[in-house]
Image (cartoon, rainbow, N blue to C red; front, side, top):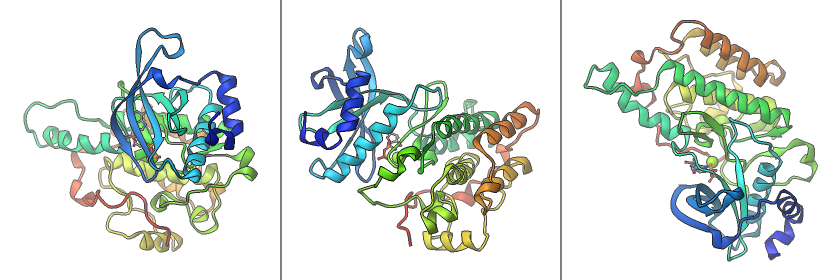
Length: 334
Ligand code: ADP
Ligand code: MG
């Protein structure tokens, strides 16, 4: 047992109990597919995973700073949350874990070839221009229905997580993954918290915070609940509707924090129907208990999907309104 696993003994016990440990010699690490402040994600391949013959393509999440026990503890906490989850079609699946040669843990999960939803939406912008600008031949751009289905997938995944008393706390398009068939799956449990065990939880590595996705009570009072995940979900709806824009365009994190407390909310995008905008606004109610539950959100979205009208008129999408998409995704809390 490595010195790091001994620190996170309960996780190690669950790994044993669930029989998900993968031998290092059965893992091939391929190219890097994602990188954050502390973690990095690689494409990889695992031999004879879960009695499969041959090699299975996977994604492997590990950390950059192998000497920092606090960062290792956070990765083990993330693994622990994933170990608790039973499979759900809208949540990324854990396939295994491994202690690397250096004693650093790796989270092995299903590989989603379409990457994260933020990049997926942004990459669609040029296709939209081709279709609506009547340029040649592209017909594979996302439709209003596709986007509504993304919203519904994510709400279903969140309904499942909240039913298991798990808070995500970093719900945003960058943390949603897109499968081959465009099903959306919730991922990145790096900030997640099991509310049942909340008294034991203490995040050791305080990094940048997702200010633009945070509710007033999360920002100012450090109160995180399923209803603060619902607020973030509203911001994620806005990201979907605007094809991956950075929320509160043109505003600094400090301005966002001030504006939110004064009651400012992002305006209705011109191509977004009133019903859809009302749903966003309901997620951004000041009073957390006035926000809808994830269950209620799925009901509203199913209702919108069943009606025969364009919730989003993508032909009217005005990209220039949302241009500053390369700002920092996470801001320092001011
Ligand atoms: P971080 O904690 O550094 O934010 P994430 O878990 O959000 O790490 O992963 C970072 C990025 O890596 C994602 O935005 C996505 O592009 C890519 N990624 C993560 N997991 C997978 C996966 N299972 N399949 C495909 N790409 C993934
Ligand atoms: Mg992330």
